[in-house]
Each structure stands twice: as C-alpha cells, then as structure tokens.
Length: 212
Image (cartoon, rainbow, N blue to C red; front, side, top):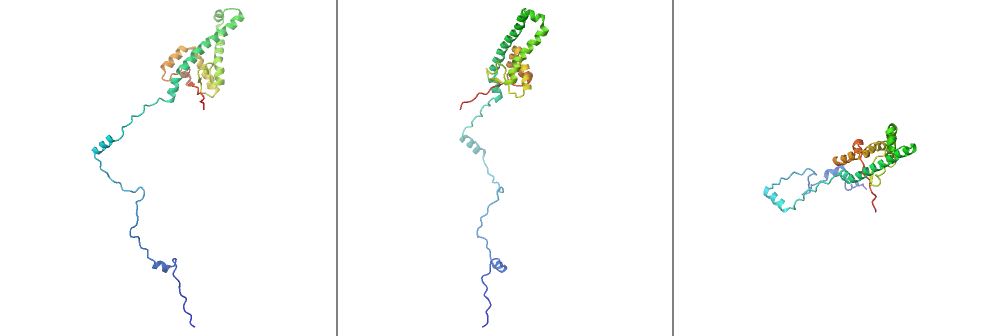
C-alpha cells in the first residue's frame, strides 16, 4: 500500500509563507490626533466694541489693598514708649546708685560727698564709672536685659557675651545722656536710642507666650 504524503496543517503565523499571504488592510477611518503642543493656532478676531461690552458686564474691579507696614516698623513703633520708660527709669536708678556709691566712702572718711569729689576726683571718677558699668554689664551679659528692661518687655537679641558687654557700655552712655537719647528716638525713622545708633544693635520687644 502506497503511503500518501503527510497532509500539512494550517501554516503558522511565524512562517514566511503565512506572512506573505496575510493582508493587513487599514481601517476605513483611522482616528488621528495631533501631537501635544503641535496644535495649529487659531486666530480669533474680536472687535473693540465687544471688549468694552465684556468689561462693562464683568464684575467691578477690586481696588488693591493698602500696603501693610513691615514687621520691623511695627515692632519699632510699638517699642518706642517702652524704650523711653526703660531709659528714664534707669537714669533715675543710675543717679541713685551713684549717689549711694559716693556717700559710702564719704561716710567712711568722715567728709561730705562734695568735698570728697572735689578733693579726690581722679580716684572718684573711675570708681563711679566702674560701679555704673557693673550696674548694666552684669545683667546684660547674664540675661540679655538691663535692670529695667524686664519690667517693660524689652530685650537684647544677642547671644555672644562680648557683644552684650559692648552694648552695656554704650547703653550706660545712652542712659547718662538720656535727653540726647530721647532726641535720637524722636528724630530717627526707626526710633532708635543713642546706644542702638552707636552700636548698630537693636532692642526688641520681648515675645509674650500665647495661651493655647
């Protein structure tokens, strides 16, 4: 019995003959869309009358809000009178301390304060200068506040002891010449004291704790 040739099955897709016989017809209506950013611009003609009509029909323009003063100007304006009170009370305190410091050696020696100052002023002046400086230097270096700054909510925002010590010296001069310092606070735009003008540092209002 003769053997019949094996019947070949359906050609697979990966066979070359099948690919040659396959037909790929494009769809009758393909969906096409332009790439993003390549859309052709469309010109629209608008007459000036239409623009005026749109502006009249629109909402009224809100005027711009007035400029608010900066935080620094608010703080300087709010701390003007506290600074005046600080220097005024410290000027009185300094006169009291200097009077007591001069009265004590005069009582020990047994003479009047005026006679002691006139007879030994080369020693009395450095002595009073040291006592006055210690009155401001010690609290400023330790806490950043002079004796009366804590009562009126004023502080020196400095962390280095050297800058605090330097400010204590010019602050003492500012308190000694309080009328001149008050004139500087009135005339300067940021209401700076004489010590602030000489040192370049600023006294700020101490922030208060907020209740939750």
